[in-house]
Length: 183
Image (cartoon, rainbow, N blue to C red; front, side, top):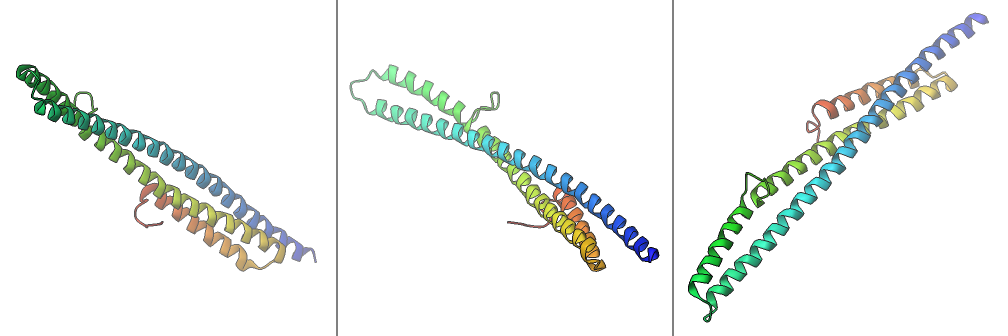
């Protein structure tokens, strides 16, 4: 009789080890997911800020363009003063369109916003893979735990298989987040 209990104890120890390994990878997956989610949120805020600045530049340029057109139409304005002012406004509008030195031109702002959007999209792709990996680890832990209670070995094997699937999802998220398209 003790031989039967010894086999069950050995089996339970192996399943307990499997559960521990799955829990370890679950913690890793959740940490990676949280980090990716935080990166995505930060990049989204950065993108929104850059687009807001871009829009402000566009509005200011439109106001100057309108003022230039209005000044040209004013019959009572001194032609030299109008010409001088419109030239200054033209320089300002050109600087607002592209200013590589400061990086604050509309062209540069759009590039910064698009780069932040790309970072956000990459982080979100990673996040989704990490979350799927974490789900696989959680289900694997439940199935392996059920094996201890029921003694059905297939549950432990299914839990282990889900653990391998979870590791694969973490690897995809880490190394090739765009290889598998998820929502």
